[in-house]
Length: 147
Ligand code: 4NP
Image (tube, rainbow, N blue to C red):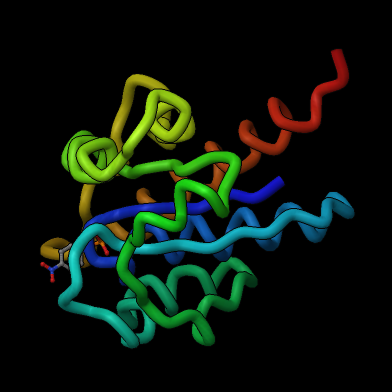
């Protein structure tokens, strides 16, 4: 399974989703390829936000070696699923899709919900971590369920 996590800056939310899903996939013995990207270009090459690094570290997940990159058109070919954190990310990624097949790969990470951007509020990193962790667990369950 190849999964891409997308948010706006690729420094707060999607690095957490990337790191947590990678961690859980490894725990479950799954050989999945996981990455993250931002729709914006401001933070290309930067480490995740120090608050995301810190909250992940406090729960045993190391995201410090990640570096931000921008979403690119080729990502539609490279990944089975492209999970976006909010409606704006959805709109921005869908706008780059060239076919219905590409559009179908793009999904809100939380079905019918959003992961709020914690960038301007230090207190939101912990709840956002838990929100992402719970959804990553659900994702593993649903994508490994045998029919
Ligand atoms: P993210 O949060 O999309 O979760 O990485 C943001 C990080 C930076 C900015 C916006 C959102 N920014 O405007 O620089």
